[in-house]
Amino acid sequence: MTVDKEALRRKYREERDKRLRPDGNDQYLRLTGRFAHYLDDPYTPVMERAPKTDHVTVAFVGGGFAGLVTGARLREAGVEDVRIVEKGGDFGGTWYWNRYPGAQCDTASFVYMPLLEETGHMPTEKYAHAPEILEHCRRIGKHYGLYDNALFHTEVTDLTWDETRSRWLIRTNRGDAFTAQFVAMGIGPLHVPKLPGIPGIDDFRGHAFHTSRWDYAYTGGDPSGAPMDRLADKRVAIIGTGATAVQCVPHLARACRELYVFQRTPSSVDVRDNRPTDPGWFATIATPGWQQRWLENFTANQTGAPAEEDLVMDGWTDLSRRFRAKIEHLRPEELTQENMLAAFEDSDFEKMEEIRARVDAVVEDPETAHALKAWYRQLCKRPCFHDEYLQAFNEPGTRLVDTGGKGVERITGKGVVVAGREYEVDCVIYASGFEVGTDYTRRAGYDLTGRGGLRLSEHWAEGMRTLHGVHVHGFPNAFLVQPTQGANLISNIPHNLTEAGRTIAVTVRHALDHGYAEVEPTKEAEDGWVEFLLSGTGRLLGSQECTPGYYNNEGQDPGPKSWLGVGHPHGAMAYFAFIDGWRESGTFDGLDFRHGGQDR
Ligand code: NDP
Image (tube, rainbow, N blue to C red):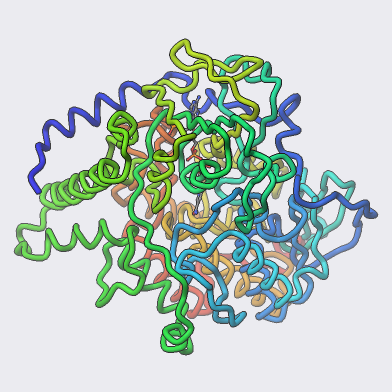
């Protein structure tokens, strides 16, 4: 394939420039005040209960994968007294809230769904659908007895370290005020829905909801794919064409009388190639230790680390495969940074040309096909994979309304306006995503007050600081479960979480076994880790050359704070190997274990 690289670079820049806007993250609306009802739980009624004022060994904020895998590892380590506090009505996190039609994992189930080996579950498909993943979350909760002490429909409002008693005081929106020796937090990278700040958004008199609170009472159907029969006479607008819209648009296209898909930036939509799992095949791979092998193999392939085979073989590993093929014939002295970057760009151009060619091959109307093509490098925005999304635009009732990169102009009482034309609709569905670039404590909904009254928001005023992405100086007995400053593996978030869960379980076990009341990273260790992180090449995602999106702070310079939003300088595999060795050594380098106030 020959590509005019200079022409493509120019086109990418032009398309980016069309979308740049000075308000960056401020263009979005927070769902508070008059928008708060968008957050109501449509799935589970809220039950009355008495506030908790007791004490637990470990409190965990968040009942998604992070809380489940950490709870599981703690239970395996013999820590019985674990309380998960979750704002949803059940375990699941992302998979509790995101029940929109067609929701499924985009990373192969065998590596995406945690604790498969431990719970004995065989994913039914290469890319499992949401109901199966939610059920798996419940399976983990039951298997490890995590339901016993869990608090659902409960939001932590405050976490304060009690220095005299070496414990955390946890307050919630349900009046709880209980204590815990340890707290851990896995609030999820994408859990606060946002709305686009479109003028007139308040004026709409029809029905409206966000994709993460799907209103099946309005649409009919259910998350398992039953047809949304109540839309048969409805005109529906969906605003946004990210990974969520890509999955639910085909279902809407089949169900609605008229569907208008409002697009600001097209997603790159590569082949999905989902298929049911053959139990015979699964039996051959599911030998002891299989999931860890698959996890490591996927991460190695996805991040360009050496790997003898590619077990998952999909779109996530394809770019690395192409890149490797381009550099494998180079002599050692030719492996310069310049040649590597050129090989990476060439692989990307080829990949994106194929993705654009697929649009032409699938979409019948040439104008629609033209508008659906993504003009940026594949990792500028979240890559999407689907085998029915592009086809949906061939449905007679479905219409793409491309906004030329500018977004929806306004919303009126009756519908949605683009380029001066009003599209009258009965329902507006916001597939407008989740807060990403905002501060951790804003997304968490609480601040931590640590030793000496230090607030986490203050400690991180110049950017995140941790030891290994897990421990924070000044915040004893508190742990984070998230990817940043650790492996930072974006393509398979659960891999980061299971490793953090292991680290926390080992640390808590050590403290309990030796009667330590407190554990905290030293300042030297935290500073040293941060310095080590900064010795790398910096952030992989988030180039300002890219079209705006949440990967690059909506195209606005995120400032020096973002320099700390990195992972291990030698990549995810290096981090996992390092942290495994750290745990195995049993020396807990960088952590200070204490018997409490008296020995500080
Ligand atoms: P995104 O933030 O990716 O998409 C939001 C969409 O809304 C974008 O298309 C955006 O356009 C559009 N938008 C915002 N403002 C306007 C406006 N004023 N007018 C018109 N359009 C507008 O949210 P998603 O919920 O799709 O996905 C969020 C993330 O969740 C994904 O990136 C992925 O990480 C995860 N996810 C994972 C899935 C999986 O693993 N299976 C499935 C779904 C989501 P623009 O691009 O121009 O900003």
